[in-house]
Length: 351
Image (tube, rainbow, N blue to C red; front, side, top):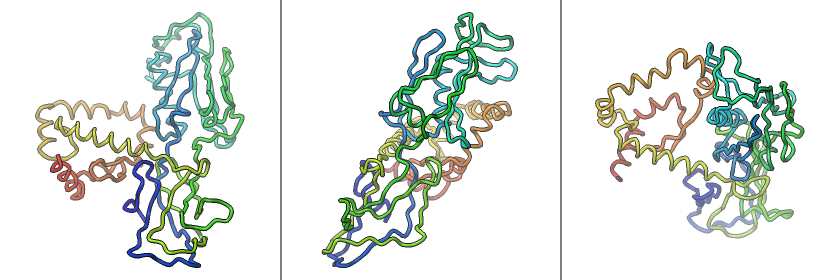
């Protein structure tokens, strides 16, 4: 069973196997031998994507995380982007490093997501630049985690850090739950279950990071009895173990559509990935583009972004032409393959 058996294009969670004719399934059993799916259900939704911080001038600034799939490090990176946009940072003039006054630290040994706040100095220290309006006294900014997002960080609802003028650390008071749907269940509508209306076949808990491929192979087959009768098909569903509703993978569809729209935009500008006439035309019209682009990857850039670059090496992205996941560092090779060129030609023909 694969994507060809998909019958629900909204949630991507309902599959159906059709038989050529009605099959007698009296006293028959079924079991899962293996399952492969991406850990792609989003953990940040419209229900838990907002929190705020109070700056040293007692003004509250809202933070709204775009809906998607996030690790704590991703939320931290987005938060740092927001405070930088709000000019609530300092920059070391010698090293170029940025100083943030609220930080999130994952403590695996303590099973905690610690929130650290640092005092904003009374005035700008020597060797730093900043657009902060200093208030003449050292003071910590405060972080507030409202309902729902508090559970991801492992803090109580409406948790707020204390005010102060020294480094403060706040450990999780409850178990952090970065992925509210930490497991999914595979259900067969034709399975008989005396204790529930759901014909549960198997439960899968992701042993991998968000966005990675889950491969689960039961050590022993777990057989479930099918309801007696003649069937033309079998229907399978992937449901949340928390809500027993379809896992929401709409984000992946939106991302795919966004990638495809971006592809058409680049293509219209002569910037498409294909190494042919459009690419050559773009280079001729923009002779300095490649040089300027390459300049971003100078040693200083690598030094300042080493951790992020190394993390991205194994990251997978979706090729909008082939509708498949490709390692980001292999994308330049993939776009030269026959499969990609054939799919790209098919898109151009459809246009």
